[in-house]
Image (cartoon, rainbow, N blue to C red):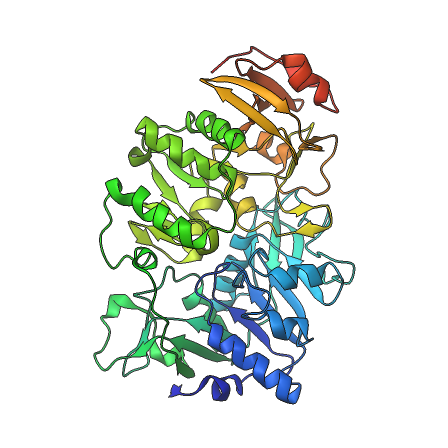
Length: 509
């Protein structure tokens, strides 16, 4: 039977050495007061300590002094297993200092492994991850030199086929943010941007004899409607009510509490961007890339668009009139509508529905997407892409590996080089004013997020769209298939590549 508690009392249920499952997605839907209560208790008593944190979508507030950052930095955590570390500014730096064990698994594979635990299974099978960094035959999921746990990902054979087997430590505590608890302890998510792994986390935790702690905005006397309940009260041990701070209507647009027609998507997106953007990616090079990439969209496509430069695809998809003829999706579970960006990435303006994250990754893993648009840090001559780890820094692979593993057409949206790149677009004629000092196309990527070998086996169509040209994945590696008007093929492309590419029929767009 659940109890209504203060945050400090609820956190008293956590023991040293516990494995904690977190239902959040980057910077959204974090149970912030529960994290702050953990930090208060740890500062006062040195407990709970030796914690293991598991989160498919990552957890953080884009602020190194909030959420879990403090108690992680002070030594309460021994191990983190996470799909994405991007919103955890302090934590991702400490990982590279070997302060604790840290593992990066594809977001969808963690979500499915949590669901497997909920069903009494030790782990989940997937073809996602084969031939990329997480594969034990390549590098494995450990991020730093002390992360040696080889039980998390194993290569196995089933009925003559190769799979990766993802197995997580048994979750003993679930920390979840919901909207309201009714008189029976049922938890609704009406004002939340997503439900994520909430139900699976609760089921897994209870199957393991653990404790479920839920932070809510309010407690209501009226029973919730059965279809609106995400977590039934019988799964809940502690409910902590924390009155939310007022938020601007732009944020309310993400809850689905009022209808937002297609004609208003851009207006609401601009209102959000003014409040949530972490940095601007709109520039000439990005616009050139977005315009060309958007030409790949077809009516009735089911689509995923990544953050950064790929977001410009939506601008030109709207201008061409195709945007309202396709269905956009986002990893957190949103289908339809217009995915938000910046610090509220994972939320959706005008979504048709918001499904559990594990179900969304069923769609991605089974090739249910027609096309996706992704960014990248570097690309090699074979067509492999590194999208998760730069020199001396990393964010994590997130849903990238799942999204690109089976999607019929994969479009990478990247500049040819970076840091100092300057481009002029004069009515479609492209001039490279200055090349950046850091190349994007390299002889060998430092870590593989996308396997060209696997893509060829899957018969996927793969394009690499830049601000000056387009490459396609061929049998032997990259093929140059387009050079834009104004671009000199030798000076601006071939002479700058550290490897030779096949030059195919050149089509100017």
